[in-house]
Amino acid sequence: MATSELTTPTDSGIAVLPPRRGLPGLKLLRMTHGLQRVTLLFGLALVALFILIAAFAPLLAPYGFAQTSADGVDFGSQQAPSAQHWFGTSVRSEDVLSRVIYGARTALAVISVSLVLSLFVGVPLGLVSGYLGRWVDRVLVLFMDAMYAFPALLLAIIVSAMVAGGQSSSTGGILSAAVAITVIFVPQYFRVVRNATVAVKQEPFVDAARVTGASTVRILFRHILANVTQSLPVIITLNGAEAILTLAGLGFLGFGIEPTQAAEWGYDLNKAVINDVSNGIWWTGVAPGVAIMLVVLGMTLAGESFNEVMNPLLRTRRTVGAPTSVEKAAVTREADDV
Image 1 (spheres, rainbow, N blue to C red):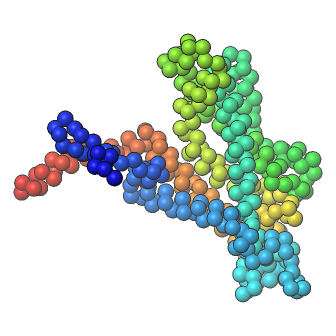
Image 2 (image 1 turned 90 degrees about the vertical axis):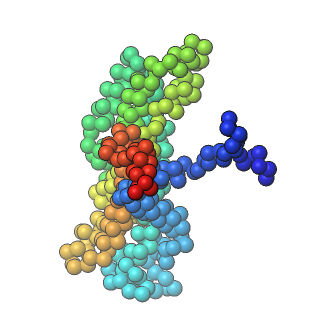
Image 3 (image 1 turned 90 degrees about the horizontal axis):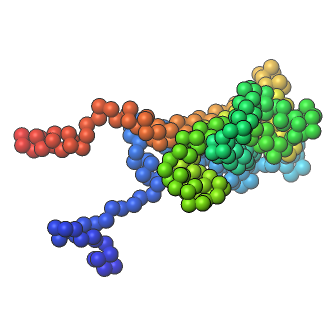
């Protein structure tokens, strides 16, 4: 490669290298320091492990999530951990380890579907409400506030029962669980986007687009959308942890996913508490409980770290009292003189 492609001439005649552009993820990591960087990396590691286990569940699980026998031999009910069943077997004679691994796939599917649906519904409604205002804004805000006033788990139970046909047993599927969780998240994205849109729509670049004859749809999705979604990645990460807990709550109460359709941690905890704990059998409930704890911990740590890095106010507070580059240079110069 020629030298002219690597250097940029200056007024003094000295060629300097152009600024190097790194990956956004590495730039975000360089903005963290000390314990904040440790928590971010630890949270991302837990989330990455969760995604890998969910993606390769059929390869990692020794048995199927509803399998109760192998080579013509039944597993047996509530067996203790052994070489054949590392985490033991459940009251339904299923391998606990296999159900925990497949439960990660179920959780990832529900999180992905619910978050995508929440974004596709909440973000456009927030844009329309904040930009148009008047009676449209009043109606949407009233409706979203009414949904937000409901306890999250109670609202999810109602929606799940409606989607599943009003039956009280665990007859729903992944889609019905995802829809139930979506209803909880839509008001959150609506309120964030709507409040940001109300502030952005008065900016000069929006007025300029309006004067040039741009349509409302073009103004919303071409000029406003990119300026009101900066905080959404943080909310998505934190909502992922909330989705795990809500899904587990639905399964524990009997409104989650049918056990023959998919493995689900909340349902397994329900069976472990009702049928096993009273008999001194602990291993069937420890594995799904630890899985829920680790996934929620990873997403929470990652989300809180992202919030501290991307929030200018928090970055300013963390750097108060820190020496500036000029002060550092002065200290270095004094040390050299000594």
